Amino acid sequence: MRKTRSRFKAKIRTLPYDVAEQLRTPAEMAAYLDAWLDEAPDDAAGIARALGDIARAKGMTRIAHETGLSRESLYKALSTKGNPSLATVLKVARALGLRLHAQAA
Image (cartoon, one colour):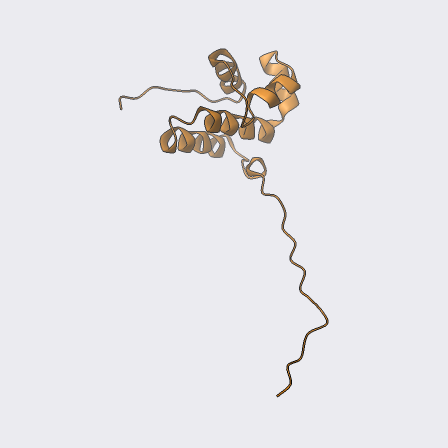
């Protein structure tokens, strides 16, 4: 029996996934941040990135305007390598319409 080779190779294309495209409603945005806070409470970079994802979903220019911070500084602070101050986190949360709350562990 002779093996045949196909002349056509299937081309698989992958696209980068961007969670910001999936965050459409305030409830989805709050649930996303809450999941980060529940699942990785010690991952400051991850939580900052989650805020960045939500900010991109709402529009980084809009959030920059509402916080009084530049878009560039927000992108930097809310990236995986960013280290935003608590003041920045609170300003961004307020601009996103989110409220952080404390709960006994």
